[in-house]
Image 1 (tube, rainbow, N blue to C red):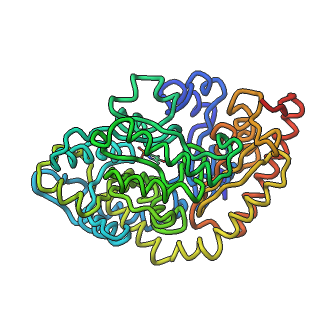
Image 2: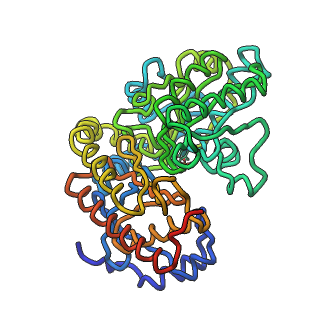
Image 3: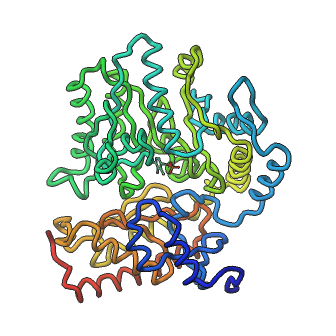
Length: 464
Ligand SMILES: *Cc1c(COP(=O)(O)O)cnc(C)c1O
């Protein structure tokens, strides 16, 4: 692919970015000093930066570009929809064809008995909707005391005030007065970091039972819902022990707590089935969707609502909605994305080709001296970096120091792996081929070798 020349030189773009653009989750002053990376185009699983480097995107953007970059069909559908009806709202007793068709398609793919969709513009917005949905549900059922929502530490549910409160990210709660009242957090099922001497199975059960303890502490009549990602994504691809979800489901059923499965990452194929709820055997009342719904080509999200919950909500006026709920262009693009997923049998490709190669590639990395364990579900996976495998030790250096160094070595080797603390995370496009996965793991191993050498040089190979 040729070097892109239709833009200003990189240094000028970096200076303009530093002068005017505030980045999310970034210390902008540090970034301005280093110089931001400018991505100019992408095709398949490869990004191209402003200097013409091709980088293998092991993260599918931010967990979203599931069908890969550069699919012209989605652009064509967007152009056609913009010409025909670029915008109309779904308030005031109106609707439009893209919203109707997309809601129908989502209901077809969703778990049994979940046939209603409330649209939003993002995952954060959808989770804000969910806070109001579950509380309104209990109000209408005559149990207005059921307001509390239980979530988990280190969960990610979005960045708005509501969804950021649902999330359990301590650095987010430290800014801006989060969490809002009536949100509670229990421990996460992260056996590698927190399981101590317990077996993964015993630890999974113990962490699930924290939900029961919290319900009893708050009183069953004050708890509206439990929210969780089937597999934690931004928390570091934490795949729970097999004992965890059956116990959570039992507890939700016993105490009549609504279960919200935040499938913003897990939904639409990431785990190898249409929904993580299928893969992990959950029976949620609400499913949060976004990201893979449109493969990130347009911003769109929503809540899929179980029929009996929707019946209660639909009997009253739900005073909630967004200007862009069910935006026609976003809905049309999402619909085209789902058409491609089905007609090209992306799930079949995952099962037969990509998942076996991905899992094998991750397992193979565990013989590296820095890698303690590999965890994966479908095409999301992570490896734990450690100075001492047998004790699952953390590094003596501040959490994330080593992960950050490794991420920089990944970029230098033209592969994107994200670091969450000292876990390295992968979530490639679902259409990635076997040859591309071979290349990904070749680059990843080289980055790990360089990280190891760097840790020796900097004398950072010490256990906490
Ligand atoms: C990304 C994410 C969100 C937030 O979605 P936005 O579109 O960024 O608002 C919510 N939940 C999970 C699990 C996510 O990964």
